Image (cartoon, rainbow, N blue to C red; front, side, top):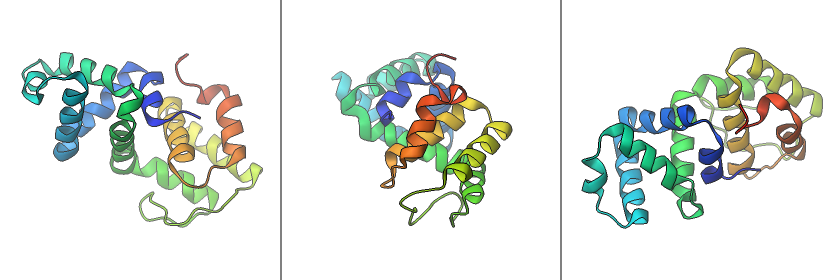
Length: 167
């Protein structure tokens, strides 16, 4: 399973850029925190990054976010993007599994899920949404939640449509 900083590194540069751009446009406090953390990791002042053209700044930030030390920041970026921008996808997945949620956010996940139900839910997501955001969501879902479902892990490892980095 991929951790958040690994997800940033394995997803396409376009999707990683979209996630960072979403934070820039829709979640200024998260974006400022990310700039600060990246600046600290790069041993520069935040103003150094802020003065760069946004495309150059974002490329440097995304490169830095692939470091293991940036796991928490990368996780926050991915979670915010999923919960705020991909709410419909999260809801569709949880609805297909019959899991109660509040706009894609779950309080208690079951310890396991039926294989057929999981496969049907994943197939429904892949039919409705682009494969890469679905793969990022499912990777994050299985890694960032306390309920790691072995059948989801297997599906993420074996389903060609859910592979990152090769597309």
